[in-house]
Image (cartoon, rainbow, N blue to C red; front, side, top):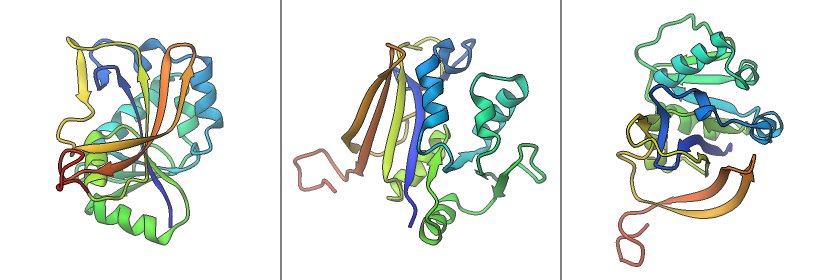
Length: 192
């Protein structure tokens, strides 16, 4: 059975992007890019929604730093709006229910799985109890005025047990957790 990791980047206030800002808020540095190249999860199958797929396909076309490493990784896009053939090589399109498809992928394979962006997909997988790890790199910016793609809107309450933390490039925080979806506030009979 494979493990599933939600893998995302956010501003300090929980946005996945910001209008007018470059990718990675212009703060990707050598340690962060080294992490992308040496991460033991770097070859895990990437799961994403159509919006994230289109964004990263554009980053690939424009030569965004670090994005070329994703070209060779197997990718699965969950979408009812995209059609085949997809332009980004090594990408499979799944138009059926993402939760059931991922449940099957986890059961039938030992290959690691991780998400890339895709907050709606992440929320669905988390609510379904399919997420084994949650990893986030927090970029030291607040995007109150320009923020886009709020990462946690609509998510259930989740308790996070810290597994790992690191500082990258003297400013980025890598945090990895084991998530537990809660039925209510901690300490009440309603918790999971």
